[in-house]
Image (cartoon, rainbow, N blue to C red; front, side):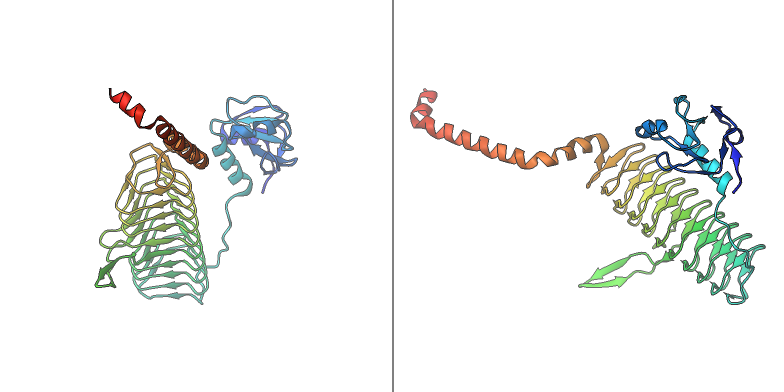
Length: 353
């Protein structure tokens, strides 16, 4: 970690300083927890009041904010600028260079690129191919014919079944499984018979997969995770599903087999998506939604079953009033009954005349 002045940081992110450019920045923090020497950021407008009380030495803001009690770094995209500054100040996790451990087991027919670091108890099976600059942590299993691109990082206890294809600069976090058999059975006379899963898994470049994820291989075609997509922890991708490029899938998402997601979709935590549907491009699915139908491009949906967000907010806002509404309906039914009975048969005859 290296100290920087606010002016240096502004030049690095192509931003503009309002206030003292010689303020020294050592680290970063939230507006509420930052201390002297920290830089913070403002993205969500509901935290704007904290600009008056923050202890941060400087704050990264957008072009619409020019006044605060501390120096400001005005940036085109404040959160992206914050990311750049965090990388500059702290960098990413450093990986110990161990070479190839003598306690790893690498098949004679496997190929390992240059400058790879293979930790203890890694198993690399026949005909596997590992690109240059890869880091493979202890107890990883890489199955027969698996291909991994350059500069990928595989954390402990990851298992890759045979034939999977992993791109370059992919990060797979601990305890995830890639290429397990899809959940496919033919039920006949009460018995579930396993269907061979002869497809594979393709994980494209710059994907990150969280801890304890399960990516199933396809029954016939491949399961695909598109370039630049990021999966949180405990995400399950069913057999033959296709996730488009640059999607964000938050923790505990489950996507059933043969479903397709377009590009730049955001799927919030604990969402469940049924199989054999199509989710368009730039779709946002709110947390805990249950998606049972295809969704066109650009929609925001919520609820279970998931419906368009503005309609869903109106519908779900009424739930708390349903008991009262039910009682009111019963009261009205009672009044109508009383009015009808008090009118008697004579009134019915007079109305007929």
